[in-house]
Amino acid sequence: MVGADDVMILVSNQVRFAPVSGSPSRGFGLIGLKERALSVRGDLSVKRSGDEFRLEARLPLPNGEDT
Image (cartoon, rainbow, N blue to C red; front, side, top):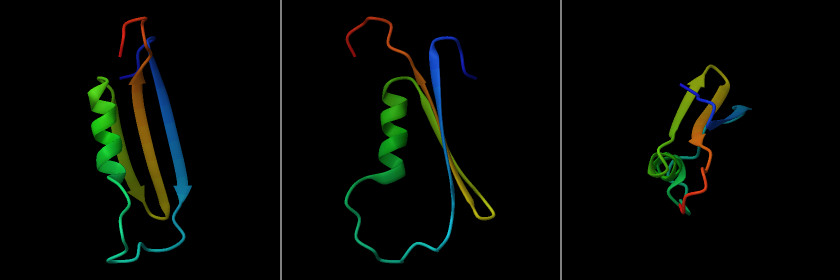
């Protein structure tokens, strides 16, 4: 649920090709994004439906506290 003190980010992309199996990874990808969102009391969801990839993030806005 998005509140008045939250920001919602939505990224939607049409999938044009399948990921290459065994391709090298340079980071933590979606797991890292989810962990970062949770670390600030936010949330992140990733969905794929047909040829659409959708990422939704809800993050709290800073309220003047040190984060």
